[in-house]
Image (spheres, rainbow, N blue to C red):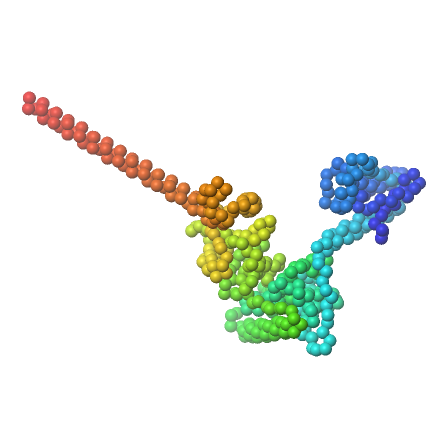
Length: 455
């Protein structure tokens, strides 16, 4: 089990097979006399499977043309317990191998961190009863956060430890509980760290002010119920107390980091500039900070660094629409743009004013675009930011082509309207000419009658 090797008996000899070469192990239905165990192996010419290890796939590709491979082996035994036990052990070994391979792939791009240096000659800033997200063991993780010489250490009640170095913190955010159910401290890291079995670039510590779920029987109380008023008063006092505690703890962390020559500064989201949208699955409040655009309350977290934003485009901006989509184009064109859907139309002017203050360009259009095709077009145009193409003909510079395409569509609609109007005028002129001809004919008829009477 430890060597990840299966010894299969062949002609009285034990032949080793690495567990990664086994595609699956099955037990066909037994007959009256014996029990069977079939081993299927990975061989050349088979359809690629997600279960095959990269090293195994490379080995088969390298030796598949000039080597012989065993496709399957069938074992028969009169004692069913032996083959059943062997089948169970093979399945367990394959499971362990897949878990080990997944963990190795998860940790492949992790950058080793320096070891935490604890403070011993002075009082350690500490805050207890904090909930950490993402959870360490898949369940709610509560513990204590401490500020030390070169980083922070979170210790859960089960003695699970997560260290965050000051030098690995790129953005630190403090969000008070104004109209939220929690007060939190959020860290966006330069390099991901391992939290439990998964790597994460966002680490958050919070305390819930009120329970997010409310019992239905408690919601039936009157507006002027004394118990309800007392509960609201206690909640306001608790919010104020927690905000002050977290704010003071942030200042202590900043002082400790500065004392040891590290830069740590907490930003607070601007709630007044916030707007609602759907960055992932549900409608949330998205708030800008000095350096980011964030939603830290719901998971998965949404955080975009403003210095990585190349351009903003607003889709479905029409007079009839109640909402629009906000497309965030990053400076790395290999990454697909991010989208915030279903933003209310009445918040468009405030968002555009904020983007102007941040010196971020934006355009607006009526149609939704295929951004994969757009980004491929942009990457393939060496004169994307120029006002002329390779033939010297004028073209929109940069992202103005998004606005130009939309204006072109609008002009075509206006031209169609003008043509209809002109056609209508021609019809009216033709009708007027016909009326004049009829009047002239009538006058000629009258004159003709008069001549006949005179004769």
